[in-house]
Amino acid sequence: MKARDVLRCRGHPLVQGLHKTTFEVTRDCELTLSGDCIIGVCADKGAADLDDTFKRVLADDRANLTTRLRVAGESIEIRSRGSSRFSLDHPTDLVWRRSGFVCGRTVGIYSDYVARTIPRPLIDRLRHGDEMVVELTVEIPDAAPSPS
Image (cartoon, rainbow, N blue to C red):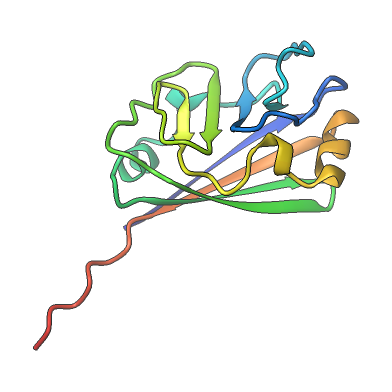
């Protein structure tokens, strides 16, 4: 089973991309220096706004999430896991985490990238306020075929 969703946001002059354990995209349009995990603002969706089919597939312990961030010719692909513990009900935020911590904002756990490890050319484009497209693809692998 596979599902997809896309959201758009933009950067901000105060994007730092320094957080060691998460990165975040938010519907909020303001950013302060304390938000060192936030890489995108003014998003057109929060976790609660994601497609219902997408949320249903992501809320499975077998789910594999691929997130592609695209900004002005720069892109990165991030691998994360879904979870049956996801509520995906936060109205403004989406958070990807290196750990297994889950709350209403969590869209990916055990992510292979966090704010600090996102390539600096992409972060630099976000500091210029460029638009970012966030493509989310979730897949539950087919069960292994039974032996004959």
